[in-house]
Length: 326
Image (cartoon, rainbow, N blue to C red):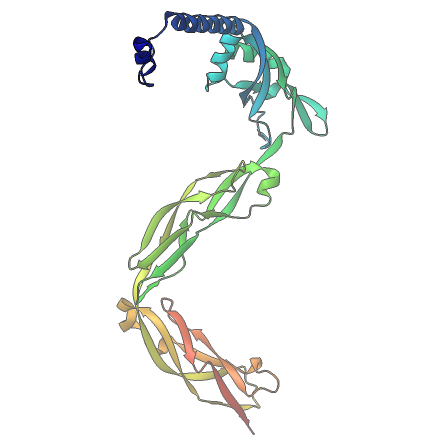
């Protein structure tokens, strides 16, 4: 009795010795599973895989439409072992569709029967694999005409000069025109091409840089050259101001016209290095009597003569009053 009581009182967490029967059972299960898997993989199965497509032998002067499929679906049949290798492979050989073999189906469209390429696909993915069918079974395409034309280049630039600095003139693009080529229908809608967008802040020196040209995304359009040079002259400017006489023009001989005032101020910006060369007689301001509006007693001041290298020219006042003396 006492020995039985001791066994009942053994700790609950005591490890049970590993039974040879359990080991044998596990080994049998693993062997059975292995034999079943080997048997299953030795059988043939049909699965669907995706394969890439390449188009070759494009007719001269033609373009491939942009909506053609870049892959095909293929039903292939092989043993489980072979299919596992195929499915795990990420480097599948592309099916090369020969566009010179396309046949006209009317309406300017052509067709390629993809199932005619089963043999080429099978030889590319493995000799032990049989290609049952390709989807879609026919690829329909319409060749697009190719053309060229010259278009101007627009620079997409934002130039923010430092205080007292200004851009001397407009941005120069070299070359001003480029040649684009692509589908006729698309090129008819393109009247210019732009450079990539670029911003410049606190600029104090000339800009001379190469920028890439930007084409419509996804369009089959090429451009030559694809890179242009953009140039902008940046200089330090100062403000100049002169008082000059105001002349009247186109006044009939029988009209005595008097303006108030008879002098105006011209205000402008000029490069610092050119300021000393600017003289008042380089400017001429006029008021044109023919431009007098009915019922109005004022005329606009126009500058008809000025130095070429000044900027932001204005007059004070911009309009003058006038009277006609009898």
